[in-house]
Image: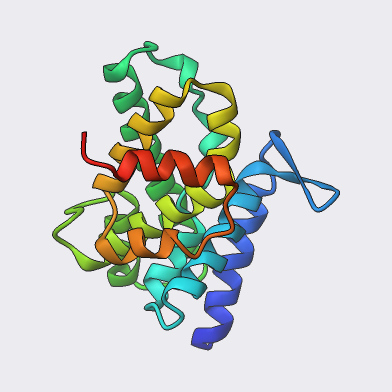
Length: 197
């Protein structure tokens, strides 16, 4: 299989898997499986942010949340420790599903291990490609999901989440936030989060 065909096959397989998400989100008048829409947003954002990203990064970005609905948050204690445990288990799930799909599409072990490395978020802040993935994650969250989150929580909590998010981002991605189409409310919260306290 030619490289481009193999890549296209993997993306289609990721999307088919995420298309099984029973949770739906309305977008442009359509109800779309939540994780399928998220994956497509991730790829578009990576292309905007770094159009010539390596193939394994493009693959990791597309399957970053693959199968997320299969392990619900309420299976773990509703505290910080439970949340972190849940996130850790999810990362392993994403890496496992991605590895199986990539192998079935003909990818070699080296590429599969690179994708798994990124999905497990190894060496964040120290590995450029892990940081790139995290930057895209944060930009997609701020552009597409922060408004809804902010509508459900007190401003102080949103500002705290934004501060934690910014700590995970590179300087370049923080600058890129200024180019996002955000509401005045969200811009104000980001400003407050960026202000030293």
